[in-house]
Image (cartoon, rainbow, N blue to C red; front, side, top):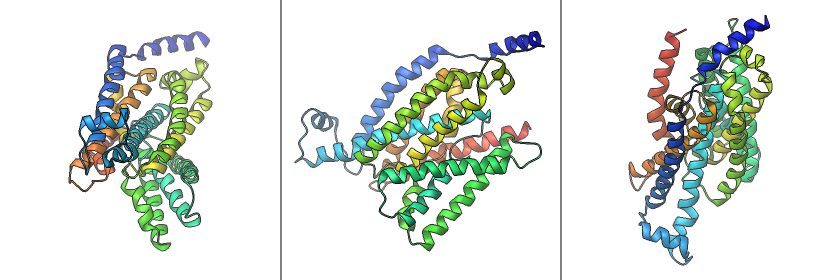
Length: 348
């Protein structure tokens, strides 16, 4: 029996392929493009600022100049938050798809984002003057509740979970939690406050939000990178992973906690920004292969780049007004989701 198992494992191992040259180019080239995009994000807005002014504000900041204040108090924290949130959502989607082997999994589809928003609606009612840190904790709790409900509903079927059933459960639970959030907002007259999280965006981000966000993001990123090799093995199947000595339950539990951490922090700062966690993992796997030791860091770079660019475009669509950045990401994500749903549904 053991010989057959070892032969089976041996035949599965070659499936773990990667393209390290492309991955390395994405990491270094992507970071360079990301920094350039963040610079453009600082430049463009209701008041366009040239590069020389940005450089002067960095080298010789003058608090008496309005342009310097705009750069340091509004534009730079906004760009940093967009990069951190984009990377966090992309990593969350990557982990969810890797752990469940479900190509339709993402924080916005699996109820994580809706759960976080639902609990923040409750927090606005019971603790209207809560600090940003308290709101973030409520978002963490809501993200966990959303995940538990989705997997609970999806597991009711006698045939168990399938990618499409899990996506349908996530869509239904997301609709339910969103409706409950709207009802709470209207009944308790906090609709104006909760509308920010529905729209999604980083327009009101300040340094206090960045200072809360980056430690959470750093912890989540480090744990995700440490889990990457184990998730690669997990993709061969639970039986193969166990045969190779992997603690599958512990890996999935830790990965789920990372998803809740990163998504909860993102929602508490920027509200509902969908489809980054769905689209970016697929693009990354297509480019770098199926080794999550490359997929996780490359997803972080591409996710950060996507949200920074989307945020910049949201300011340029209808100036001087801003289009919600969630709308920009949805324009990319919705067609991609429909394509995946059709492909997976047809293969069942």
